[in-house]
Image 1 (cartoon, one colour):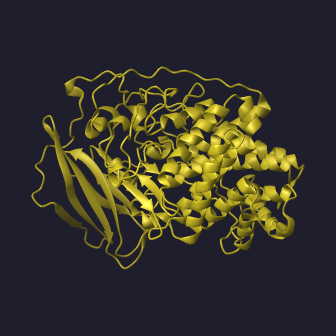
Image 2 (cartoon, helix red, strand yellow; image 1 turned 60 degrees about the vertical axis):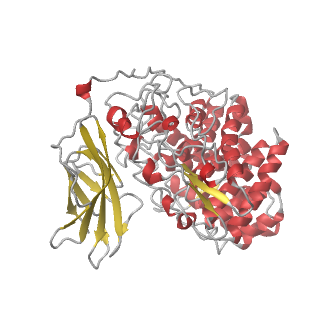
Image 3 (cartoon, helix red, strand yellow; image 1 turned 90 degrees about the vertical axis):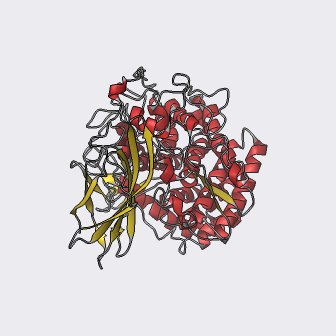
Length: 602
């Protein structure tokens, strides 16, 4: 748990405090928002990049605050309350700044696309720090609703320790909920820049989620009436889900409202709350494989499996939620009735523990997916700051491309151990490759790590086991001789005079439009940033498109690598390429452009 909280310190943006424990980090992002005339300094970087995405950040704060609200004793017994509240406050202070008017919320800082073209420390950032806002003309009910939930949960967490701050958080939470409910819309429709990274599946769950948390924080019947009156229209009693995540809060809403029922406080709303409970039980039974076949998928090794990309974030969120529900059921001596039999609260907690155990090393690879814990954990984390020597060692700024040349492709382990980072994790067959370029598996996220705080403190309170931390010394950085610098694998060619080159394969359903969007020279080598637009020129939707990219010597973004050499597929967020629609991918390399061709499609 202590290591997990350290991860949040490693992700801090802004002016770092004197008691910062992660010493390889420095101040960064000190002018965020200034171009737009607003102070957006602070908050958290999302993952291995330097974008501050509002939706997963707010969700992570809700998870941290929920841990404090319902596992107060467990956290206090571990002497971690100060660190946990500090982690929450670093984020809530940012959201207070970002909420500049009742109906305005600054939702994102940084451009995901340009950020991903660079590999540099946060302290050296040269990429645009564009800020994006939500307002009545550009609504974002999902993000504003999640921010309201986070601030309401945080208000509860801080109430015993700082009542005036708790009151301030509640003021912002109420205004944000009103904004989210009154001006409805998807945040990524208002901010298309976020679509390729955190596409929202809907905002109905966040509206219910925010109202549920505001009811817990205020006991104002208005909010309880809201979740009851809108139970059907917003899907709270209609959606039976098998996922709990930054994007899908239904299971969280259902379990949160079931607590009211278990506490005997349902009153005239009891019948509707029982419908919420039925869906909470569906989720729990599905995780425990007792849902009459409609279960959550598990890997052979027993890990919850939802998606190939960063799957551990879904497992950690589900395990946290089950630990919480187990607590609620146990407190009232309630038993869960699943289609395949009765389940005790201890059985629910045991399953949550199995997920924590898998994360910490009880898995087919015998590897701890929590960096810094155990004897064997990933060392090639897809994280810019962790993979580049800190300013205290490498004093000169590391440029955008120098980062790729010298650090990204470096075969040695990262020079900085990013303790507590939960990596993306293994595939559905429990396979894992500790490779910095394998970002689906080796990149950590806020939303993956946040639920672990509550999960670990609950399990620790039961076991009394103190675990073991294995300190592994980082591999020291030694500047390679000049001859070891990255060389282009293909002969140098001058950039074509024409910036765009169409590539149409006869009979194929797609065309490729190649262009060079920028160039730069380092020493004797000229590098090109290539953009390829893939357009469906057929009359039918295309799925499972796989491409071959040959002669590639640099890094590529916008496609997902396949196990086969030089093979790539559509990224997770693009399921179908509709007629006339396009996708774009980018790569950087010296020398001639790569050869792109179709491998297969449906």
